[in-house]
Image (tube, rainbow, N blue to C red; front, top):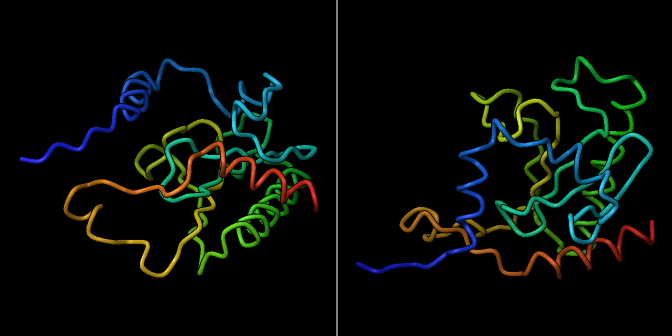
Amino acid sequence: MKVLWAPWRMQYIEEAAGAEEQECIFCTKPKENRDEENYIVYRGETCFIIMNIYPYNNGHLMIAPYRHVATPLELTEKEMLELMKTVNIGIKALEKAFNPHGFNIGINLGRAAGAGIVDHIHIHVVPRWQGDTNFMPILAETKIIPQHLRETYRKLRQIIETF
């Protein structure tokens, strides 16, 4: 049997096990004013972009309102408009930085729908490339992320600052 060591995943496992007890990252991280450390690449008036530190693909972003609401039904019109405008900022930055062939963009409402953070709405923007699905996730249940999160952060932040 071959062993693939991924000790950085333990943090995710431990955090997921205690997810019900944890504070909401979409509420706490923006208040800390440590954007680089927290991977916040953009701040708008009502919404922001934060990198997913457990990404499906390199450049996986999450767009969330600052206000703690669980569903789109609770958003104000201003928040809804800015949420989608902020999704567009994320798409443009990812296109410029990584030239993806497509995107998965979506919202998981509720734990049954796959939401890891249930009570704070957020939109996932995941860049995709032809051939980015290979044998590793299928046979080894392992995804390869080719760039360090810090480098991805710096690249996206630098691009977004030009908008």
